[in-house]
Image (cartoon, rainbow, N blue to C red; front, top):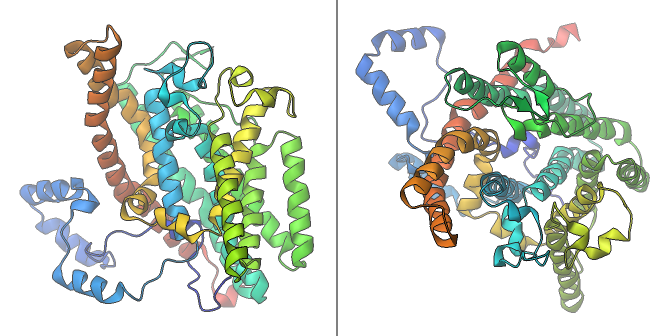
Length: 477
């Protein structure tokens, strides 16, 4: 299903688009930069700052850029994994929605039908819009797929030199790509705590906590520690970033499997990956299992083709859609009281029989949701729309920024609405939440857009520059 002449930019970092085309070239010499800095006036600096604050989707494009885009639009086709950028963007938005709603509305952690919980928003499938834990599982499946897809194509073409060259480059840059933006986000939270913008609690994770530089450095160590296999730390400065070290560890597992299985037969490769995935699930390493599942899906995407016979093709499409629906149902597995919630009571009687069952069934749901999408272009097209692709561009930034936003601007807006509209009674409480949400969401999207352009993209460019600076010359190899 792959094309021999297809562009090779299908690794994790290709899903981070570069700055808009109308941005000025950044390849100026050092002397040019010095001259431009000397010529900058205070007014020019202000205008530059205001221009940077303008969201990327509101930036004007030059006539030359528009003409070139229109002329190339009919011939441009999205690369094989571009739709997954949109999937990741929507998933990041859902994580944000969960973290914004679960405190004012803690009932979202329970399922429909438990005791008096009969709200429409708690119904299966409807609750997907805030099933943030399931979306973390989706992140891991997507990462496993994207990180390995290009290399699996090269395995089938027996392009081993290109495979190992690309793999060493991606492995070298991976830590910088993940941790540098995460550190920047956590530093913003640390500065806000120092300035008193966010409240410092007396306890974090049930332990006494004192805000200080040492506490911040300890948090950065936890945030970037892939050696701790308990994926449940939260910390104070950026609680949602527990997944960054997990993402790094899963990436390294994928790269190790690519190296170890590059020259094996396809059947052997799939068998080993399937055994390892089952073994990981059995030992409660659901996160690693999801990365390996993404690799398996990438291999199947390269290998399999749907039947050309129309009736058989319709049957296959129908089965794939049913599988996706089942995956969405499992992605709505509630956090609290899941074994006594209608629709999910059966999970009490099947393995796993411990609290691990939630992570397990969310992981299975993510695999069943992402897997069929690989073979359904009609579903892929939903994630290739302009809103989804924009969310994909800012997805990592949105994931990094929204936690601090919730504790600052979001909290101020919600408290302000409660003060002016009220929070006693169903309707005043709900109207206050809706109004504050309407005001707050554009602010988070705007902040994520700036963080993407100001931190995320430069971090990726820095990783590429640093790799070139550290690379040995051909004569030294």
